[in-house]
Length: 315
Image (tube, rainbow, N blue to C red; front, side):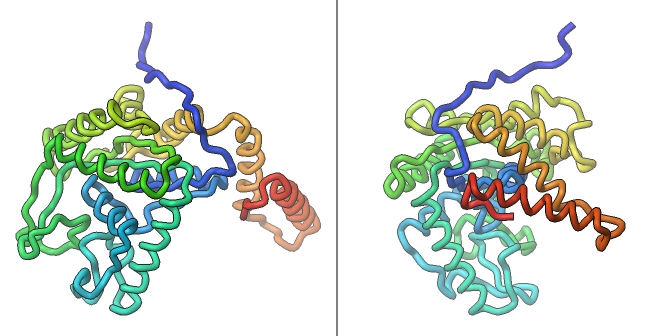
């Protein structure tokens, strides 16, 4: 008896190895995959402007980085003792205005540098619900806990999803024509929007994205959303909030991504790195003991041996 579906996985060309530079942008699922890449010491940059849930938020920041439009005082505001920007996540907010503007423009430059040099860019889209600030009449990436009455909420159309993603791809190709772009839909459920509303949102993202995939070369789709809702359709794969994939689900999706997008020649190196990472996380009962000092010496030897193979490796 067959008790589980299996999403077909196709090995891709232009795979990620230890010479690759991977830029990840989008929803909080980016951080799940980014943490795995970081753990195994692949070169990567995750969400320099914090979590971005919807396509237009990603479009605005990429456009701003590539066009060279700096952040100014007109882009920020003071609320609850912090300076914020509607275009970025609250994790960047600061109490000092000048420091905040400096951070925003440093992040803009960091993003531009990676857009130009990345071998792979991963986009994870979380929702097609967007919020518009009533006063400025502009879409925002984050509401920063400002009262809901200050915003209107809208589900952007499939056409608008396609248009936004298409514009981003075109901008990136202008500065980095050889980059490989990997897209995916976040498996995180946005149930605050409502059960039906969440499914409508995901449907718009899937349809809008598929329109692009049929037209543009060197842009690919990884089925993280489909793996979650089909292969892992059981609440034991969710955290207690019943919204986010748990550690087991993330590991399963990572294994699928690893199989499809990570080069085979890195697999043994990943195993060696995992041994070192486990050793670095070890907390001894007797740190000063000879046995532990020998353990540390052996660990340093393993790190040095790996760094001889991969010079850019840092622990």
